[in-house]
Image (cartoon, rainbow over all chains, first blue to last red; front, side, top):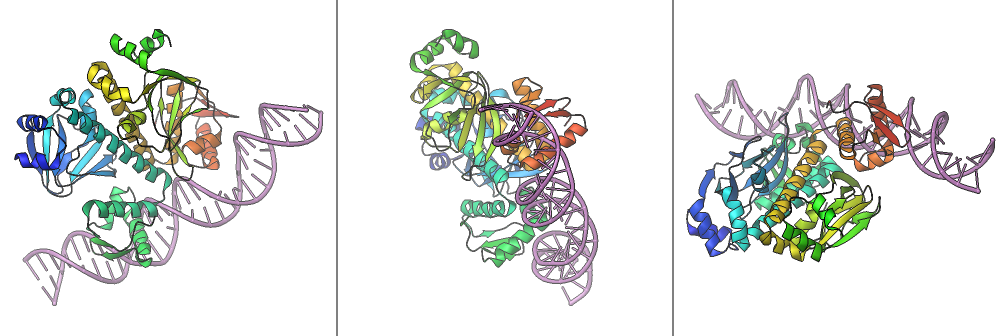
Length: 213
Length: 213
DNA sequence: CATAGTATGTGACAAAAGTCATAGATAACC
DNA sequence: GGTTATCTATGACTTTTGTCACATACTATG
């Protein structure tokens, strides 16, 4: 690992913390599509994203999944921290969207760094806070919104995160992530196309004007 | 406040921490039905429950609410901690179910105690962890389960938390908390009664045999 | 370019949940 | 006890979402 990677991705960390991380962690890389965590897996390390993009899903016993949020460079998986203390497993699945590089910091350092480095302490708290907020927004949408709004919100989130007006996903993939069915998504997208919000292509949705939810 | 209250509710706290809390916090009491937090409110204190019972809801702009979880004595509101760092508001509503007594610890002490007391550090992390898990379970239910299962789960949660086989709520109240409608809940309860799972009374549901979800 | 595989479009139908209207039941209160 | 509030029951209907069946369109690959 180059110092530069940590420097750029976590500029707020103290120098001593960066060195401490560098000394004690290892870099792992994941190909686009590869899973960083599987449901039922034990955590041995906290994952800090330094490059790429990760999608985090909730999964049930029947294999249904629900997309919850993205993890971007400079962020960390709260679950891997949360479960640290208790050495518990979690029904969470995380998948690399692009080729992704993460720092895997063994859980044993979590506690040590918390008291040793102010910036680490703030980073961990901010991680909890932001993931907590994401979950609340997710609950809002499933509990209070109908599928058309949820789909539109889903597309907006993609657009914002990927900074790209073309969402390169099939209707089936979107349906899976929203725990719906392909036909429903197809129909809703068609409506959105008629309203001039999107343009539909094979394996791609071109976003024209969303965000007026 | 008596030392005994903290002693009994938070036995895991170090003596010095208990004293520090006692010196710097104030006790607040809420009547059954009273709101501890309103949507949009700023947090100035972290709330530790020492007696009673609190229900925590997610609320949207339209006034719809969704029940998320209970807070029992010995637990704390993660949101009031989470928002501490950022001084943000949150779309959360908390209501006392029984008469409730809480320790209101000014947010300024959060950080100080974290580095000063190991037991406080663990308490805060455990609070995040358990509330995070609760939210994930909530997401599971809304995303993957139909209303009949969610209703049954809701009743089980009541039963377990209140240690009481009589749920003293009207169908309308339950419908509100599950973001459904009274008629739907009435019909589902009727079905459950026919299956011998519950017995229905006015303003009360007697639980006979649930838990076999 | 032929064809197999995948993606999308669409009608018809089923199921679940929400809405409306109305009636009966129970409790509360003067 | 009679009136009023609230709570519950229920049929009929609408809307939303999910399912099934099948047609069509695009793409990759030989």
